[in-house]
Length: 72
View 1: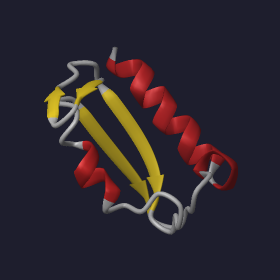
View 2 (view 1 turned 180 degrees about the vertical axis):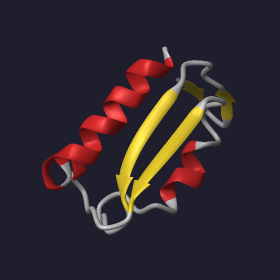
View 3 (view 1 turned 30 degrees about the horizontal axis):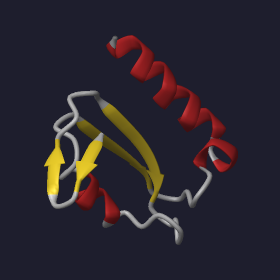
View 4 (view 1 turned 30 degrees about the vertical axis):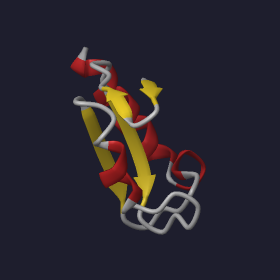
């Protein structure tokens, strides 16, 4: 993503994000702002996870990763 002042160049590179709904560092509402920067943005939310779902929910994280790999 390139940003020049107030003019944004939208990236065409797909972005996938896994967020925990209980995350205090990266709130879910932030995802709405991220969609402004890329056209290919996919968000997955884990209801009972916080900032590090790969630690607290390893099975769900691994399945999410495998789904991403299978999309290519």
